[in-house]
Length: 224
Image (tube, rainbow, N blue to C red; front, side, top):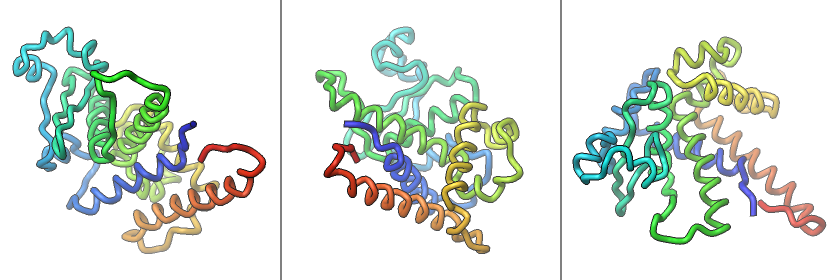
């Protein structure tokens, strides 16, 4: 069992596309706190607020829940996102979008009361990649990357969209890979169609990859 990163990236991009259609007048840098606050299924809470509410010592939160940055607690179709508001701003923004991605995509996460299995390891690895991809696509949308492909560098991207230099570098590598793979052929002069067309490119690229892999499954046991 392995992580199909292409499939996971498409899943994340599709999730961003679906929620972005319901968000009006988006401007950048995206106000991620406001975006999450508009979702009535989510309640935001800082580490300090969580500590006071649950009487959990602040210094024990990260060791209990496995993160110094943020985590979420899901109950049915609602969730708490608990975050460390002392993080540097760019890191905090990405962290919040990452946790929101876990919720939107219905990730299982880790049950602290259950044994962590081999299958859980790969599932969790895929979920983390999907949440990172979701955060990247939400804060620096794919169609915006395409529009300004020849204008942006790593540091300018980091400054404009308020994401880390590392996240900017990865995002720009992704769009370059997509351009090298024929993305331009899917995009029209109508910019309103770019988000949909970009998603179509990802879907057809994924389908093509799966078809190619299936042709050789009788020779190699390749995971899909």
